[in-house]
Length: 220
Image 1 (spheres, rainbow, N blue to C red):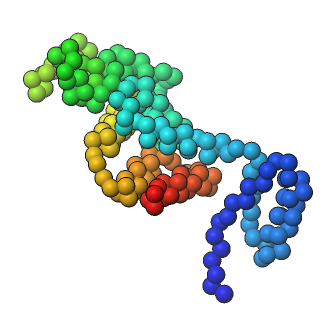
Image 2: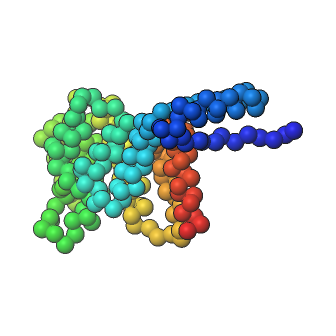
Image 3: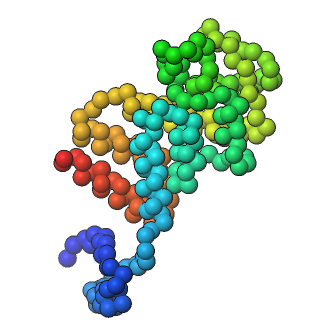
């Protein structure tokens, strides 16, 4: 009495399924008719969650290139993923804004670059200014001049701006900080949980496996 049943996973090799699954089902039915489900082959949800986690973990040391950031923002497992108004919209905007890599001008220190260009900060500022100013106008801010880049869909532009800015700031904070191993496990778990959606049972189970793998590092 008072016992709590925990969810369990049983992996059956394909060659043994025909003879084993019938016995497994009978065991669940005879033990209080416990609920159970069967999944054949690799879980597509698990694959998406693992891929999203991998992209997020690689992002802080990626140099924040345009390709790396857009791969994360466009991944189907992301809960914070903004909707693009049309296919290729984000890549086109980033191309027009001249975004190549790096959070801000500090990413280009020691290079030939002597103005606000090529990094995310200048591009996102130009995108934000595009909601208020006409294209071609120049806006001075903190000693730099920015040319607005208007977009037709203001809501989509705003959603992309908000998600990109938040992701870039979190990735930069992770790259520039030091922590004990156990604190890293907590921080990375929080980072992944904030971005990866667990909107149904399959996604929740998939993310639980990611979390369990991280918890294993705590004792390393």
